[in-house]
Image 1 (cartoon, rainbow, N blue to C red):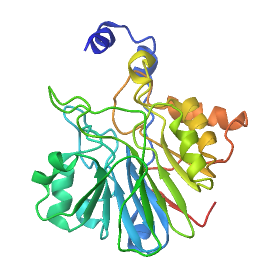
Image 2 (cartoon, rainbow, N blue to C red):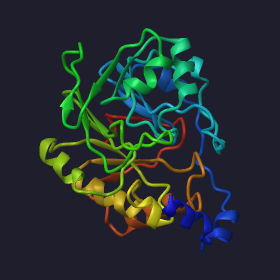
Image 3 (spheres, one colour):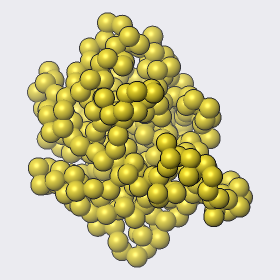
Length: 294
């Protein structure tokens, strides 16, 4: 609470720069990819991705609308009713910009899916999702799924949990790794920089695609234990030994003090300096990234 108060009382040194920054992520019509059957992913904004792997579909941390008092700065590129069949919703943790009751209920009214999530998350979301299978896991545990050539693991992140007044860290948080014979994908969810990225690389030494947060990092005194800035995200990507870095968690909501375009500009500078040990793929909202296009 004292740290949050310090933030409220501090002056943002980038205030004027932020006010003048009108950049927004480009929004693309996603219809062709959504209606097709190619393996790949599509960013819906913030930490929400539609992913197709070997015919199995996933939706990560679905947030379709504004969150609390925050409005989306870019629209959802597809109405929820036009989303294809979702097999699994991946819920990384209970913060409201990743676990949105209205979005989950909307999706459940439209279709049936299973939820893969963290330990004790069922107590929060089960009342919202009647007759929905909810599978929980702790760090480094694998979900038992019927698909023969699909493995999904729940992995650590450097984060925390709080949703109410007296529930600090009562529900686990984490990240996900999806693996088929053709593709290994890491969804980093919300995380500060820590040693878990190197530990994950030791267990999974060939990660093709890394979805890592690059926004909501300023001021560092409050954001560093929660989110990575672009340089920290690149370090995490290099630690993971990934082939393609796809940034997320920027450009959709105003959560912090940095100007909205700064994460992308910073990443592009790091790329020019040769500091990214792999390919950087900055996708627009609704833009498809096919897994066979490394």
